[in-house]
Length: 596
Image (cartoon, rainbow, N blue to C red; front, side, top):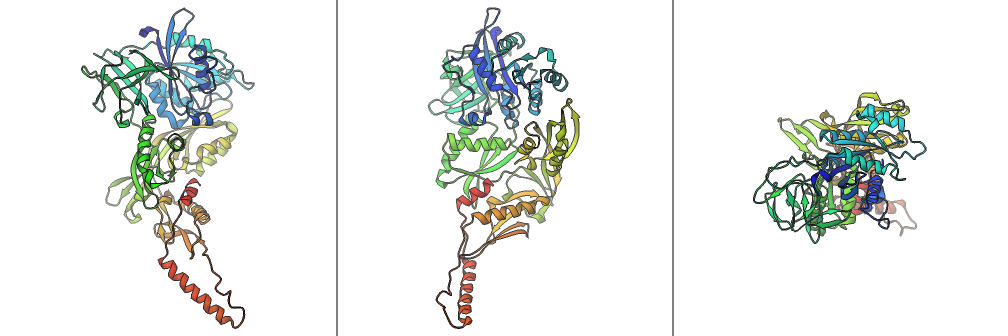
């Protein structure tokens, strides 16, 4: 199809504002899928996405639409995730489009992630079409939402389309607005083929399947292409588009979005943001994506040591499908060989672990999540520490810098006091608050990343009864009084349980860990001490009591000294056993504690 009749757009929104339902409606209205194939969350192909009701992966799909002017247009849609942990998926999808539908829930209004996604789209100079969704809800407030669009996002609200994806209201208006307002793709003027790789996945039969957006020239089976990052040349075997399932086409021309396969066997050969060009007459590279830096680190180990190679292979396949995820090999005394993995946030970490278990059938165990600290040593050297096991001895450390984030929290007015308490409890400070409208405020706070890892998002939701939302961005490092908390079992440190915490919270965390370990470590023939230590100082202790054989059972009479003599003898034996005995911590104990 000629470029004048092609429109590339994506859908952006806060989590749960109806992106996926709207994309289902657009597919149905354009006849891309029949009524028989219609089902909810059609583009969410993963079980996980359906179970949780969230989009994890961006999904491209090609639709053909006959507009009111009688012309047929090719609409290439990319449905994007809404959660802050998948912002990299969104930024990659935006680079393949010229326009964006901004979906806002009429009942909830503009939320934190809406603001973040609009800024991403504006940076790419995209045409933004606001859609006010869920207008059929009894508590929808359209006038308020329009005011927020103008005040917070600085987008004229008179261009907003009123819709209800569930009821099918306003779908034709949306399609017409896309045709009218989203500009057709313009060729870059390069001498030959230029296509951007914005996503990929691994197919057992075809190898690496790369999602591409063609910016210049055309791509068809049989031609030889070069990937500029790896410098390798391949013969294209198949090109095609999605509807939503992949289907082969004879070629993809400038402006179109689709996929290509070229017998690429190794997942490491394809880099996100790479440019595909003609092998004989190479074009310059397209601007790729900003390198993503993981925020949260955790160790992933196979429960069965023999599965190590299998896990390594599956991590490479998973990284191909999720380029924000990084990993490198590491080993632990307690858990054997495994990988140190980096994620964008806690939900991202949870999803990756769940995908490894489900899609690749891996039995894995993950260590406590941590962040990257910068440690300044007394000799002036700066070290980056992402694994507590690599923390230098306290006497070598000058100061520890921890990563901080700038969090934007939007909440109803009546919960400001509770939110301030939560932020100060998490060692954060509030920079400023601004009133968004009569009901809600936006608080900008500086909080240590370490503190928002585990339960911060859940706490915001429970305090504000589900009306609060948050988004965050990295804000550098600050000097903090951090310490390494070690757990000793029978005097031996167990590296899987060690973590870096703030000095004020170390004692409470040590006590909680010791109590949990006491429950899961099986009793031995001797008493086992479980201790939490900071440097050489013990801050908490629990004792697993010993099994005791009743050695006085045969003494049914006579002097007490006979009984005492037997008990003393037993005591000596226990002492000897404690000196030479070692405690084997079962794998289940690690899993239980790391779950907690």
